[in-house]
Length: 288
Image (tube, rainbow, N blue to C red; front, top):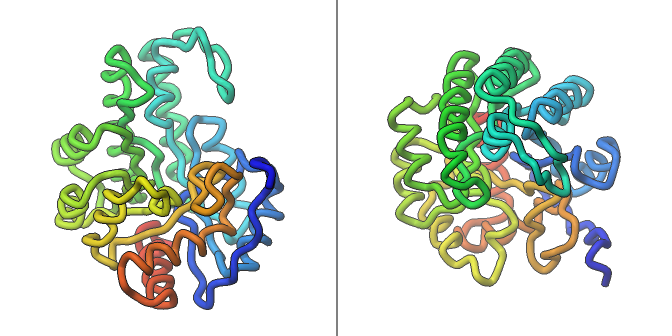
């Protein structure tokens, strides 16, 4: 089986559910094709997440054009240092960028703020902190951007969608210091059980992705086991984090049933009950 070949459609869920975090603009299908495949397995709603100004505009436009799509807009944590300090090497997805300084970051944040005011934009994110890809020289810009997104989310009454990679303590510190919005979502939850208890006490939603199915992910399953059902979401983060047994192949919203069934097994609850709870939680989190 080719690593680039799309996995087959899983057995449909009996209860509709939402993909709380996906990147349709990075997938090898049209929006219409992706939504049709998702609907075929009863994944009826997706949250399309922007990672930069252009991607956030695309998310907003796509949500405006499709009733099954809601948008979340932001500068990804790794985008803020690129804007301020430049990126002379570039990456596979992002080209070389010249340094723009604080003024360029302020301009980008103003554009995210304007998008966040739109009715079909339901979230501000993914924002947060990433200590994996950004070194010490970029941390100040990253935290400044994170704090600005928190204020944007609160000003517009939108959910805050958090990217937290190797930065658990600092993310929790900034949220406590700045004051978290009423609805805060930890996308692709990556903490342990102790952190899950902290998030639960604070009322933060925890969204689990396909990596909860990986063999080496017992700490994630331990966190899922203690997370309250009423705070659980499910996501693909497609095209990334494809659940086992399809790890390494392209992910897409139609694979949500694979992850949800694995989550139900960890929680010791029925598939239908978890799907209903997650669907309700996603609607509460993103206020749609």
